[in-house]
Length: 306
Ligand SMILES: NC(=O)c1ccc[n+]([C@@H]2O[C@H](COP(=O)([O-])OP(=O)(O)OC[C@H]3O[C@@H](n4cnc5c(N)ncnc54)[C@H](O)[C@@H]3O)[C@@H](O)[C@H]2O)c1
Image 1 (cartoon, rainbow, N blue to C red):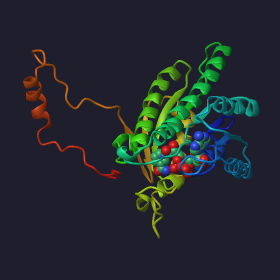
Image 2: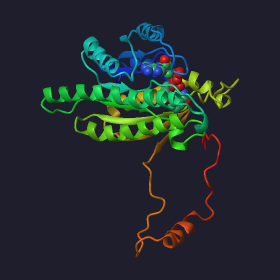
Image 3: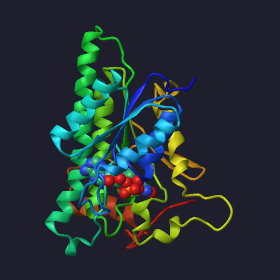
């Protein structure tokens, strides 16, 4: 018996990297998996059906059930078709892992309109289209069962880039921030159905991280614990998908190696109500002293590990 026996999952961008690991983990625990992938190049260009098909084969070799759903998550009709594949093939949909995406890094002054649009599209519209069609299915199902709570899990994939606003990733950082708050909003709507929605912030060695300027951080060590092996991400996705996490929703969970972090939503660092309406002098008095001694943002890429 696996903790996900009888559950049906979709994992997007599951032909390689994190999505492949997440699909295998969900299947190992009993879920039937719709393996979506468009088979793109690292910059989002091109398409190939082979990747998704090869992961389906790996899952079947585990003795679990899977089906490939080739398609672009940011295409409205493709997203609807991927959701329908789950229902048509396995009779239901319980878990959506939104993972597909790519990055096209560059400084703002060198970023083209196309670099901006393509990254915002694949992440934000891709997440939204998949969430929208999944929740539309859940709402109909909820109505059909007289409003009884259903088993639903939305898992979105954000990034350190959203937390840090990484240098050279304005499009990716913005898209990942959008995903985080889209998912917070979805979590509130999911509550009406008995479902949950959470965000993961993974760090692992994949094609994406090995093609960035920080590839050295993610290298496999010659010996000792392999902190950035993508396999470390699978258990978190499985746990959020499991019955044990039924009460966990609207959360930001970061994972790498043996680390786990839960981030609170932004908290006010200063909360002051003035006696008089604001003037520049009044603001200078309050803000000037608050910011005194505080450093401005630095200009580097940061991966806070401590
Ligand atoms: N690897 C990390 O450390 C890390 C860190 C933070 C966030 N992420 C996020 O994790 C997710 C997976 O990244 P990865 O590192 O495994 O990268 P990856 O390049 O190995 O895999 C991404 C997959 O998404 C697919 N894809 C791209 N566009 C698609 C589309 N429109 N429709 C369907 N599939 C599409 C690609 O074909 C590819 O197989 C991404 O959302 C990424 O931003 C990764």
